[in-house]
Image 1 (cartoon, rainbow, N blue to C red):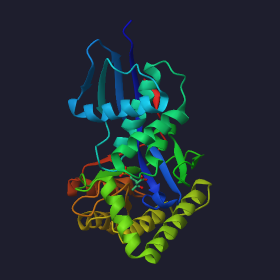
Image 2: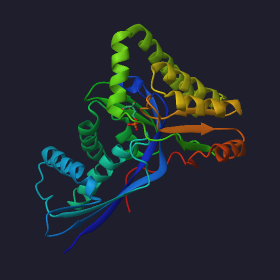
Image 3: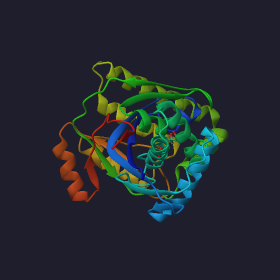
Image 4: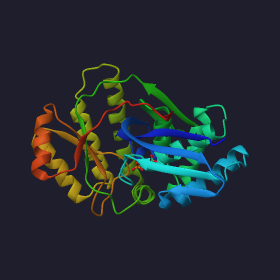
Length: 309
Ligand code: PMV
């Protein structure tokens, strides 16, 4: 019997805590309404991956899956990948892929659905891509919603679901794919930390403070969401992960009374990936984006994690 299954997993944005999370500080993430879809079907013809550029990473995922779960029946497969998440731009495309392929194999092999294991395997796949990721991206893509996430040690990661908030006018602007990948950006912060430990630790602590204020906001306290976004952006700029070009874009939003921050690893050479933007009057942002010809789109937060389609 030919089995055909389809799963999907969401991309993400980070409200606060990127980079600091690599060093054990807390982070708040949200799943978004942009997903990756993976269809898996049994064939008699070895491994067929569409698009073909995905073949290497699928092969790596199969090896990790086999090593972790000791299964050998992942040979004759046709895998079709389609995605609504821009690659390498801070929206968690690689983590969403890792989660979706892991879940697809679970379903394909009729293993009992186990989000914890799906997430663990996705983390191993992520490590192959980025070296020392925090695991936050794959965790939000697995569980969805909003999460407070923390990597205590390599083996101990804690997270908590936050009450879903309704954010009516959050936009994402694609400032362009950074020249650097996530691994390189993590390394640049690590180098900065070893050159100036006190300074960088202070930035991390201040980022943690912003994250805590976001938590108070989630708990219903009257805090200015926009100002928290701006404070977070300034700290990311001081960490050296925002390019001059992206700073200018963000200043234009601020000049019109809006708030914006990069979300994810960032980039300094030219582009910094996705920028999260908010304005109390969304029409101001829509007008600005039109004049500036930005690739801007509305995004829904708190979306569902990995699921069967
Ligand atoms: O740009 P992204 O989607 O790879 O996000 C990375 C977030 C970092 O904190 C910079 C790294 C991590 O592993 O958490």
